[in-house]
Structure formats: C-alpha cells, structure tokens
Image 1 (cartoon, rainbow, N blue to C red):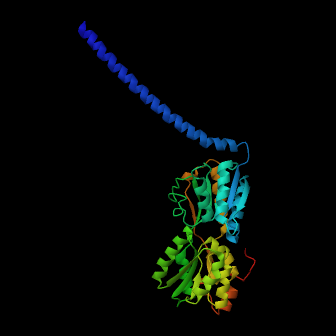
Image 2 (image 1 turned 90 degrees about the vertical axis):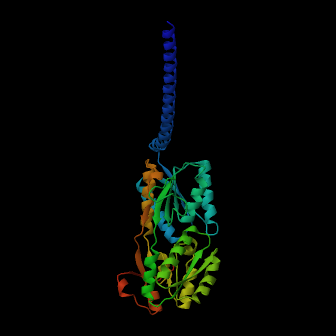
Length: 353
C-alpha cells in the first residue's frame, strides 16, 4: 500500500509539472500570436481606412529649381493616375532644410497624411530624421544619389527602415571621360560644392579617384552660400582648364553664377542637368527628372496599397543623355568629338528655373 501511495505521489507531481510546462508554452505561443495579429492589424488598418477615402500624400521638395520641379511634376502625374490627393511644400532659398524639417514635424504631430514623398537629398534627410522616431508614416524619396550614405536605408536591396524611393546614380566616370575627350590636354579641373552636403561629399570623393586615373588634378572649393559662388568660380578659373558641376542642390539652383564666370573667362563649364547646359554649360550628361519623379510616385502608390516600404528595394536610375550647347561650342571655337556626334544639341536659354 505504501509503495502504491509513493508511486501515486510521484506520478501526480510529474503530471503537474507537465501540465504547467504546457500551459507556459501555450501562453508564450498565444503572446506571439497576439503580437503578430496586432502588427498585421496595424498594417491592414491603413489599407482598410484608405478603402473608404482617398489617400493623402505630402510632397516635400528641397527648393524651387528646375530639375526638382520636374521631379515633382512626375510624382504628381503618378499620384493623379493612382487617384491620390497631395499637397506640395517647397523649401525657400535661404532656409530650405529647416522648411522641410518643419513641414515633417507638423505632419508627425498633427497627422493628416498617409505618406510623405521627399525630393532631393537634403529634404529627404531632414524629413526622415524628423519623423523616424515619432511617426509611423512611410517616406518615399526621389533624386537622392546615395541613400545608404544619407542613412535613409540600411541597404538599397533591403531598406529595413520605413523608407525607400528612387536613387539617381550619376556616372562621374562617364562625365570625366566626356570632358577628357572634349579637352584631350586637360590637366586641371575645378569643382565647386556645398559644404556639409553629404550627397556632394561622396561625389567629390569619387571624382578625385576617377580623375587621378586620367592624370587630371582636381581643384575643389567648398561654399556655404550662393553669394560665394561667383568669387569661388573666378578664383578657380584662374587656375584650371575647366569646371565641372556635381549633383549638388544649392549649387545647381544657383549655377548661373558659375556659368556666367566661365563665359567671361572663355573656359568650359560642364553641367549635370539640362537646365545648366541651357544656361551656358558646354555639355553634360543629364537625367530625365520627370521620369524619375513618375517612378517615385508609382512607388508611393504601391506603398499606399499595402506594400511595405521597408521591404521595397530602392530603384536605381542611371540612364542619362548627353546634351551639348551649340552656342557655347561656337563661342569657345570647339567642335564636338566624333565619339559624341549623336549628342542632343541645345541653344542657350536663360528661362530655365
């Protein structure tokens, strides 16, 4: 009898331990399921909400400049096709970054928008850094050269952050080879860039590496204000054979200050967008910025339909067209090299911005 009671006690204790363990596993499983359900509900919430009304997007553009304006037009066309409402904020010339940051903070605090599209690297960085910790609103960027370096995404294939978009991959090597073909004996090339703009700093590094391979010495000058551009250009042009511009927002918006000094000095300035070539740059490889904007708008529409921005690879655009200003070509008494005989020809036009 004692043996039976002892056996029963041991069996009962083992049974209780087993039941307790199973309950613990069940609770743990239920907790994980509940967390997954909440995450799914949050993700589906916006989709369900948008099914009963129009989605609303805030487009935040760094500043009023032709290339960025073209991007914005492209974004709007894609959003119009997707039946999405939008409002546009454009940074002012003297306080563009703070304007973009303020617009993003207002959205984070007051809501009212389902997604933000940013145009230009400074706008994208200002907006994303303003809302990334305080808002769950996804961000789709456009016209950003180095989204990883700007810390908008962890990688272009797997952004991870609630942010993705369209990257403009300017081919500096191609631009330098073009310059070296137009001016076979060039040894000194100048460049003016905005101080502390992450996008430009990376481009400058690549420019120097590629120029060294062609035995071209780079003379660079950093500026922080448009008023410094003309003086910086005059100083450089006294030392170099030509100046090339970079995808730099502040310089791009005020490039006439540099182009005009090149015309006076009768030395070539090479641009990076069509507006600059029309202003008076000799030549430049240029993107179709409106098409770039359309792609960003399509990405935004896909995210609004429920696609995860964090899992959407960055779209890289590298195709560009070579444009040559025939007026400047004639003024400098130069000819188009046979290699570039099929380049697009434009005339000087000052109504570019």
